[in-house]
Amino acid sequence: MTSPLFAYPGGQAIDLFNALYGEKDIDIILPRHEQGLVHSADGYARSTGKVGVCLVTSGPGATNLVTGIATANYDSVPLVCFTGQVPTYLIGNDTFQEVDIVGVTRSICKYAVTVQKSLSF
Image (tube, rainbow, N blue to C red; front, side, top):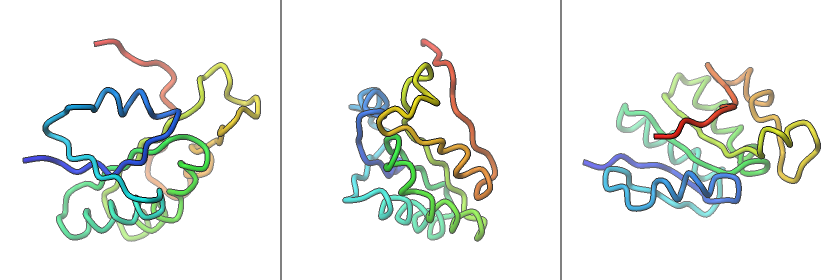
């Protein structure tokens, strides 16, 4: 049985999409916009009782999730959102599509973190 991933590709998340390419257990659902994506993941979680999972790029891709994250949080809907981010050495330099998404979402979710180091498998 496959699990849905509501995802919208973009520059800072492209490596994650490449890693998921060909994965048989994940059904990637590509909406037309990130706002529709997060509300679809919310609806999936509400109707199935399973976790809705989102993947988007940094900057405006991430900020387009904010209303859906708040809605899910206030209604106790299980939702996990992954966003891309500019390289860590560029954070805080007003880099193209850099947004402090952790700061933006901290008050509307249970947990928000920026991964600073990747692990090689």
